[in-house]
Image (cartoon, rainbow, N blue to C red):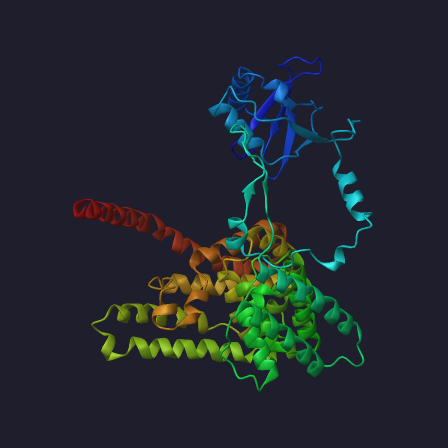
Length: 517
């Protein structure tokens, strides 16, 4: 079991003395540590390390009195209530004579515990669920405050601060006048817009724009910013204001603006919110569901590009939608093929441009032309959207693995065939290499969204991990897997040669840098 560092290992027995057969690992993150016996999961080398560290900590003055520690039976969990525990341990190591403070360990177990110091996870959830306080009213500070003016007004609360204390209290904290004004008008606008959205009969798109525009204008005037846009078209001007000052709205107002934009199908505003990362994590579930139901593949693609925290339900819906789209959804995807075709033709024109022959951009243009040719030829329109999914750095591999496990047989076959196309292309065209620099240098934005070979191999590994039995037992997959085996075998045979060449190049580069220095 891998344990993050720093950690504190405490050994104890039911009789109260040290030693015995129980070990408790206190891990700072994710704040959960598993208890086990010395005869079980822990290795001998790790146990020796933990025991040595704990014996050294016990030799430090007043260490044991600084902590309240309870020992648990095996196979229980320990929750550390204070994130400063690792820092405290480090402080003890550096300054053995200093008593930092007393930290409590909260124990999550079925056994009775001291109610004064401990609370089970179930009790925490229950207390939060039964809390009578209304959390729907929004935060007291719904925007990110400007620290420049705030920090200048902070003063120590004590005239003679204690040098041995890690944290000293301060006074004089208050938001700046600008932030206070923005917060006040946001708090007034939020309930007004929320109340209007409940009126499904009379609240229209025009009324929404009329309500939103003055609010954004007032925020702009408070911040003292200018917006270069035509104010005659209210919808376009509101989008321009969102791009400029949307960051100062706060998540509670932004979520309502997104809800209204989806309701009235103001797609330019939805795109503005996504591109400027004004969509909160809690809003993506309803957003993705709404976009899928309305066949807005282009905006789904923006979610893949800019959302950094797509959950399992959202990612599963996107993967299923692109793998096996309906006829209506497929017809709505025509724009992406035109975009990729335009980018590929532009790359070919730049590669054949005689004025670039003596320029470094010539080689880059040729690499981009080959890469975009691979990404365009032979792929269906819906598969072009999968390029963005595999090339995105925002997709978590664990979430992607779980999403793949939820695919049915037809969807899984489509994914295997798609990955097989890529492996065949990379096997036939070894000169195809990633060229992300072409995105800025040549204006070929699609180059940044072409999946690399390791992206394809990683995704295929997830497919095999999650659906191994399905791939083996169902004969319809065997033909595809045999073809993929040939491509992978050919690529693997070149790996040792490429590795040695890469090592030689790295060595020559290091020697060249040494001579230059």
